[in-house]
Length: 550
Image 1 (cartoon, helix red, strand yellow):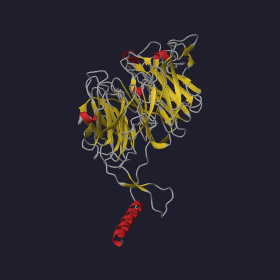
Image 2: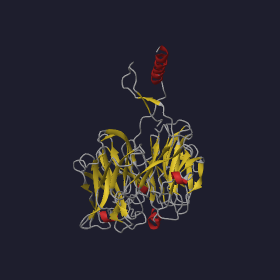
Image 3: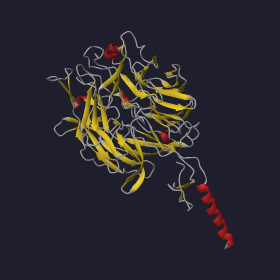
Image 4: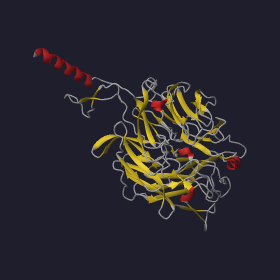
């Protein structure tokens, strides 16, 4: 007996000492609550402690499972840890589709294929546009308020009388149920004599508008921005604000009240917000007269807006007339450079512009010397928005434009070095619209920073098949893995245009146009003994369990 109990006591003592021993602090579970991760729209998750440059490779990393949904996914998947649904607590990924459905899925369990909940908002709008076929339902990325367990979603529906409406919904993330006062029909009007005006008023027309940019939640308000549906006549760019608590409309801004166009689409990128709470959007091509006395039209402009949606400052390129004539939208961004007062945007002519938000420079017909920087990043259009990351080697901006390679630019003394620091060997195929980018890292820890890109595998079909690529973010000349290395196992189907990958707690969630969410991660991982954290240290035996390294 003594011989049999002694090893048991030793084992228990070793286990106790192991559980009480100091360990490296594991990163807290991360949430992805909005498009491109944060208010600066940097696309960066600096709290990824599982995936790194040594384990993201074809032998260890790949496709884990997929989740079927009822339509194409344009919205970036969102992620909330430790959500209690039907009495069970789990990490949850939220998916919105163009068939007007929102899904909540268990984010980790491969066997949990059924949604935790699903809600459909009604008949989607048939679409023949190249950009949104065959239907238009939920196009923009929702936004989540974790303090109230609310996800805000904009859906476009065909009513029984044939009319088209947008509604803003507020759902309980634990149930999928509408919150009190939800939904509300989105409608607005402003004084103006512009396209489609009547009796001195320009009214919002849901039949010719789309809600492309991700939603913004800021200071108790939800912001929704609009551009054109199929380049329909008489459209305008709009931004509207709603109370997050009541869904009452609180403010409205029209880009071109006395002209036309100026849509805010930003390739799906949401409005950005600086540390002072100012809002930044990019307006597409259209009417511009803001440089004239009494002018109120701001097409082709970087705009800084107050939370009540008044224009605080702006920058408009000197070639605005050409941009309007040739459909050269400001399409990529806005992205705020961390630690600076600069905002970055890209346009369809391949130019990157860096603007100082404290003095944006307005309009100068003789050139753009009043802004921080302007240079040619590519010959092809810059459509997909950039991403940024700051590490031991400095700060970088990543750009993947149409018909080009991935480029990594170093930021030095507040400016981009115009010669790329590194480029990828793989180029996007002709006609493909660049790469949707995200970055993951464990802070600035060496060997943890990864640049993720969802790009077209070819451009032979619309939509094209996609490929997920992972690069060493310190030098994107090093590709770590891509989903075509083991194509039968790891491919995800049709590319979801401009939908950035979502990286959270050891997994990568990829939207697709194949009516599925695809989840990647480490295909095998050690099962260490994990000790459950305790708020108050105690000498009692810690509760330990078998768990994964994730």
